Structure formats: C-alpha cells, structure tokens
Length: 250
Image (tube, rainbow, N blue to C red; front, side, top):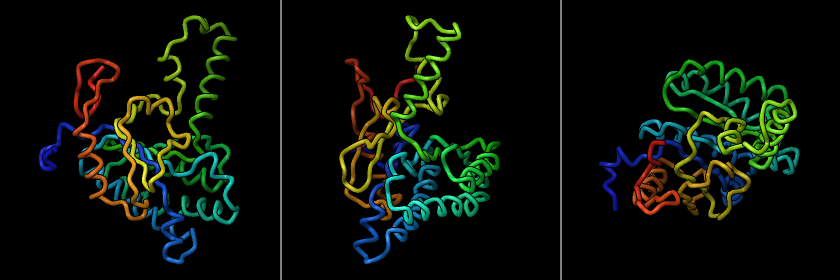
C-alpha cells in the first residue's frame, strides 16, 4: 500500500477517463438524463482541478463519442448545448489555472456553434503552460486509425513514404494528438469493463481501473483511490524488469 502523502514520483503523467453513468445517476433520482449530464460536467470540473493539484500533466476526457450520435436527438442537442455553455463558462478560469485545452475527434462534423466554442476555448488557453486538458469530442479510436491510414496511403501515393518502411512512429505522427504522451492510467466509471472505442492505440500499456461509482459521484477522493492503485502496480512494458508508476523515459 502506498502512502498518499508521498506519491509525488508515482503520479501518472497522463490520465484518460471514460465518464460513464450520467444517465443512470439521473434515473436513480427520477431526473431527466440531461440533469445527469449537467451533474457530470460539474464532476469533470472537480476532477480537472484535482488533477492539476496532483501534478498530472495531461487529462483526456471522453466527452462525446462518434457513436453517441445514435442517442435520441433531444439528448444529443442537450449535450451540444452543454458543451457550448461549458466552454464559455470555464474559459477564464481554465486560463487562470494555466490549463491548456486541446480537442481530438472529427470536429468538422459537429454543429457550427460547438466548433466555434471549442476553437475559442483552445485559442484562449493556447499560451497556457500548465496541465493539458484534452477533450475527446465526436471521437472514435477506429476513426482515428482510419484517418491515420488514409494519411499514410496519401503519403505513399505521392512517393513521400515507402510502404515497406512504415514504422509505429509514422502511425503515431498521424494520430490526432501525436505530441501528447500515451496515457499511463485509464479510469472508467459506472462499472462497465470495456474501452468503448477510446484511444485504442494509445492505451496499449495503460493501467486499467474500473469503478462502480457513477460519474457525477466521482470526485477527488475517487481519483486519489485510482492513483493509489496505479502507484502500487508493477509495470513491465513487455519486459522483465518492473517499474512502478509512470513509464520510463524513452
């Protein structure tokens, strides 16, 4: 068991979270699903702050998947409106906390108001030098890999790349955010044991933690528990010599 007061060298550089359970949280309280999403946005803000306090460098939140368009139109519209509202509401506080916002996903397919809000938020925090908040919106990992494959095929067609010499680095360079480190820790709330098409390439060596806690109830204490579990695990990265915590520097 690790000492929570002495985990400075065991904090994951990058945490990726599937924020599951908003609908069930609302249903258990006889509230509309939209109320659960709003409560989930409040939980996200608390977790963002907690990650900053702990020294986490990157936090990626699965905000809206490419499969979420299948939900009822009313719910999708509410999620899009909440995104616009969140961007405007948190813009100043995120910059004051020196948090830089990035987005990954096919942004071109989002409503114009959402695209404009995300661009404004990214631009407003571009000069921040602290933690990175990466919002996965209209994101799907298979789509990301398809886009990377298309880019590789176009480069090969132009004669800029020999298909026989394609490396992992060539693929990574064509992912949506190639400059960000791979996640060390994956957290999924809500109890489901699946990745749901989230960061399939990047999560290859991440430590996976699933909690039954529904996302609106997840807080700094839940985050600390997950990090404590992470810090106690041995990570071999396919080798024999084990290490604890974050991946060794390349």
